[in-house]
Length: 277
Image 1 (cartoon, rainbow, N blue to C red):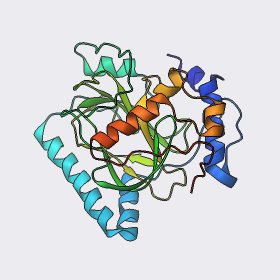
Image 2 (image 1 turned 60 degrees about the horizontal axis):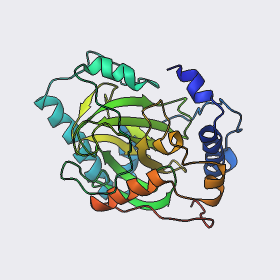
Image 3 (image 1 turned 90 degrees about the vertical axis):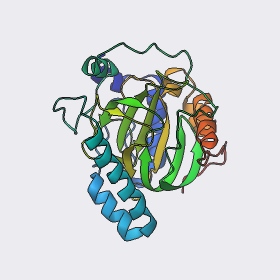
């Protein structure tokens, strides 16, 4: 896929994203011109951990648990990627399949599950968050560490030029009833140390730390497997009208229900009256 063309394509998803970014950025909003890239500097993992220590003692425990899980996992299994950079920009999922090898997972016809699975865990279990609106995914504000819902492979680690107010991280599930679906963590997040495209992850593994200073908060949901696009955008579930009237997408509702079934806080339906705080 031509990623430059994908990010600059003037489809309804892109226009809606620009409107959303303008709403979230306040006085620092983007211009809204198609193809404009986000230039927001993403704090590194360790800086955010220190900020969390200073602001919230509980977050120290969460961040330490995330780092410990990375150390234990690194000692327990070999890397599946040979020297790939932790600072990989936007990378198409097909490149990940070539790096990982083995059979290619079949494409999912639908990625809007709302049922609990014993293969999956709550990705917010060691984070302290407040649920916000349901849109293309689910918005949260808070701090702590985000973990993998299930076993999978990292497909995108974008720190700049993501089209979001911050970073964009995506992985593809390789087990459970939603094997083949993509999950993304975006906006006020920083990837765990050495996280890279092609890396295999397991359920409960630390993926990113939340940046509590990012005014956009974070958004998590179903990805499209097409650069930094969402599943809701790909399926035509998100538009300028949905953005203006805060109409939740089917994909966002499904992801919110899945989080709730795993013991996490679901998002909020805030149609027409939503104000980001």
